[in-house]
Image 1 (tube, helix red, strand yellow):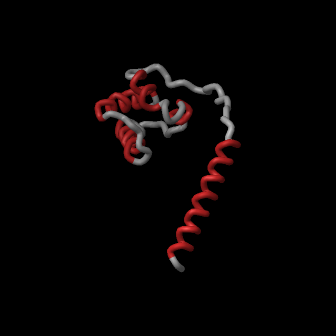
Image 2 (cartoon, rainbow, N blue to C red):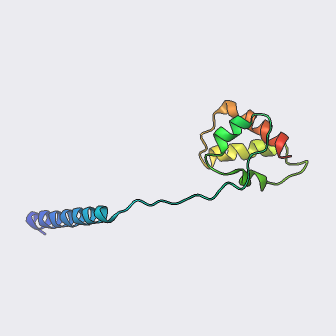
Image 3 (tube, rainbow, N blue to C red):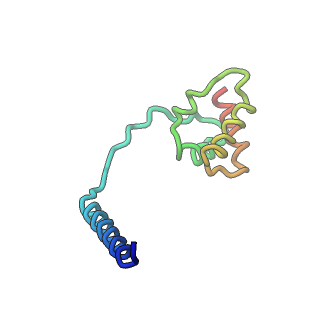
Length: 110
């Protein structure tokens, strides 16, 4: 294939892509939706403000309330869970907030 054909094809592809983007952009409309009311709130407890600031951006209190309970689900369990949120899901939790969150969860959701 000679250079003229290559340039012609690239120009045609670029023009077609530009047209599709322009037409698609003209047809796009804003989407609005209403979120449902919260069905649960974090229980009062130590460091509640830290938990609300760090956790409720990604999930509701419902999620915490569905976690296992019992004597073997204490600080070690919650430390593992908080670190999983950071390492696996990319939660932007400061290192200094980890023990505060764990303290809240272990005391409030035993």
